Length: 334
Ligand code: G3I
Image (cartoon, rainbow, N blue to C red; front, side):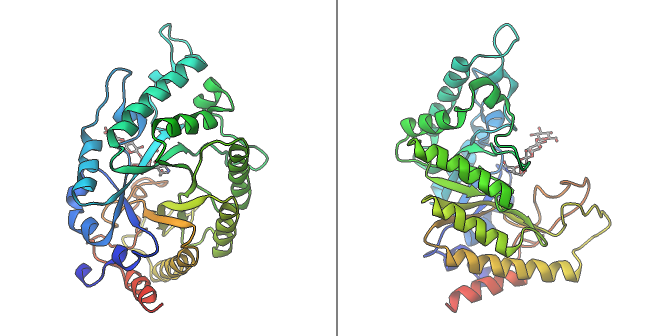
């Protein structure tokens, strides 16, 4: 049973192991979180739209519950996230006449928001995803078109990191993105990091979301991406890992449980990933899963509605999967 092994404890000298949580799962997964993880990320509750839905109204309750849980049990807590194209309320981008807010207004609103949120959690959150998913997925393009880019201009990323650094000079500031091991996107992310570093922007790390599946990306692609990011001289964190049982274009909805072949591939991938992570433990400073166990995962219903998925190391009963034992034993034998 789950009490036979301790995942985070086993990797304590390598990196913390985290899970994304909600104000609900800190209760429904409480024992599992405390036994197997030593870091948390709020899956949604610290995002702009959740914590600051109207200009003069903050809704801290659910975020506070997660921060208090982390404080109480001395767990790490990653801050997620400030500048993003999703889950950001429309009021930020609008002026009083119903038109578009200007650059100065956007910067002032972002500053006020970051001051309030970073300030409130500065004792427990030492690391923030300051900018999330700003790079486009299309080869031959660069920045994703977003209201932040449109309203502030191309320097919005640099300004966000500078503000965050001025507010909390001790905080570690991350750029976080998905498809991070896709060769073209990896190069674009590296280009952005180099452009920021060249002019002295305070960015300290790259977050590799690691929303992977049992077929993609390949281990070689992941290794190549880690090498390129590490060569920037930045620290790396795996921030939102899961290993979907379905390839992205697999639209099946009829499975009540993963097939034996799916399970075999997922085991193989997870063993390889943890070997790789251990190899890069000098630059890899945390590994966080986007959920704690298969009883709740954002991949249930995404991208195919009504479909269950089994992407994590703990099953629907919150028990460790066979591969979880493999990973722990492999580390103990090193
Ligand atoms: O809170 C509302 C609720 O009031 C409403 O009744 C319900 C009906 O759909 O929706 C609830 O909001 C949902 C929210 O999660 C909270 O559960 C949104 O519809 C839903 O879209 C939202 O999804 C989140 C998604 O980000 C939004 O883009 C996922 O839970 C969350 O796992 C996911 O996380 C992102 C990372 O932040 C960034 N990287 C990718 C990752 C996966 O998409």
